[in-house]
Image (cartoon, rainbow, N blue to C red):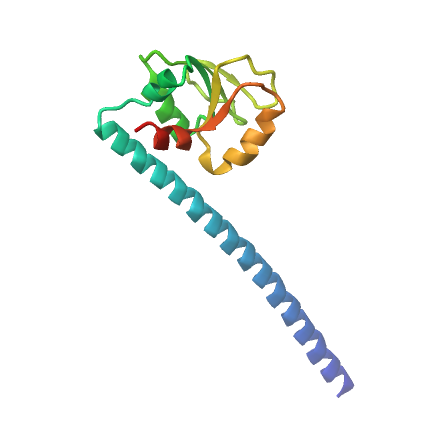
Length: 159
């Protein structure tokens, strides 16, 4: 009888530990899902605004011209970065280089630097990874002495 009780206690403790582990795993998964939802919602709102800007016949290069930014660098060459790069092709705004922590395999037609490399001077760095802007800007502020802005700021302040 004593072994039976010990076995039941051991089983109950194991079940409780397993339940706690599963709960922790589910909590982390839920948090990650909520973060991704917010990230994609921010991105959707910005891209929607960008479409509205385009529908009014405005190119984002106008923002840089109005602010005296002739030579820029782009941080983040994923889908948004590529779209931004293509938006500025053929305009008076020159993308001198791009910055991306995953620079291998990026073929953008400009030099690609990793964030830890020495960055040549430009008029401004535009961060396309808008949901990570604060941490990227903080990291870059210690390396450069020129402005760092979010693509979100460009898109919302052009009209």
